[in-house]
Image (tube, rainbow, N blue to C red):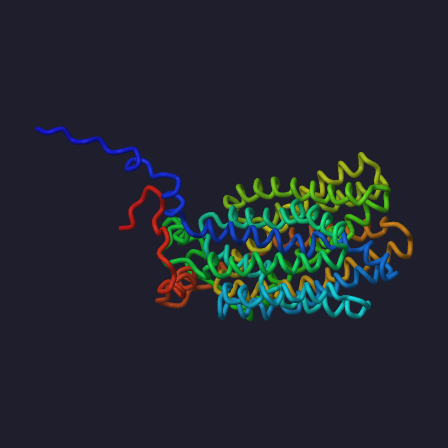
Length: 464
């Protein structure tokens, strides 16, 4: 009997390149989304405070006037969110990103030409409309569609990308502003958006996974008790008729009221208590870096938690405590250090809450549309936070009452999340249409025929 040759090492263990090629394509989608979230958030939100003093110095505008521009931008973004969500549900994320990227880049070049206060407001509003097509909602929808078994983990990683925008982009934007001033920084932002988002849309982003992708196939024992896995879903019209929709909306609105208001004024606050701009930007980056770690830990356990409303109440309670610590300490070093700890514990979970609450309450069928509607309602309240905080500083030469306002808002959010935790989910009473395939399969199947062939089997399992 002849000797049988032993299998080679490459046949026994796939090499790193082969493993990359055979990996579930959703991880590549997630990687692209993380980069997009980091750059989009870092430019549009986290770095905004860096422009406050340069604009005040050049145009002699009051801080409230400059901050109102951010409020207008946020408000217009919220008003346009339902339209963005509807377009995504109808045409897909990829067409929206490919159309929105050059328009967003052009809008930043337009902002760089600002010479009057009304232009500051109008140009930021234009930017807000087109920016929605490439930022936040599109990426949340992509991750919800591409992941089921580990959706919370994937969303946490996506949220880490959101906070990493502060870690990476705030120092970068500070260097750019120092080198080419505020208008040059907006030109830089437009160029960066074009160079990054257009290639991502062309070569990486895919709207939906193959219908038989293993990540979308929940274990059989979980199908009957998991309404989302069973294909149940509500439309926007059905969702807005439920108390759960409004309670979640109020909870997220009051949560983000304090978070957004603080993030816009974090750098000016630190400067107001005697820190340099460099130290202020560094503290913002530090808080965001710690938030990335906290969020990844939250995401690891969120997949195992059926109801996330009570953990959300703990997050927001920590946010309220952080504001009170800063108020009592008066910006002392020990107070800032303790504030960062509690603030990170509170705000880190923000990106994880909304998509988990919505998908578990209303399903995936109209997720983008429902998310857009909720985003619009949320921003109708939190849009005033930056402007009110700026007005308080102009009137009192202090941020003390702004901190009180943020603490009260976080406290209201705690109450809303606790109420939501006691309510039955609307989806639990919904039934899938007779004879229809599950929603996740329908969503995936929309592009199944034209999607490239990605890994469709769980590692260690056959496709049969």
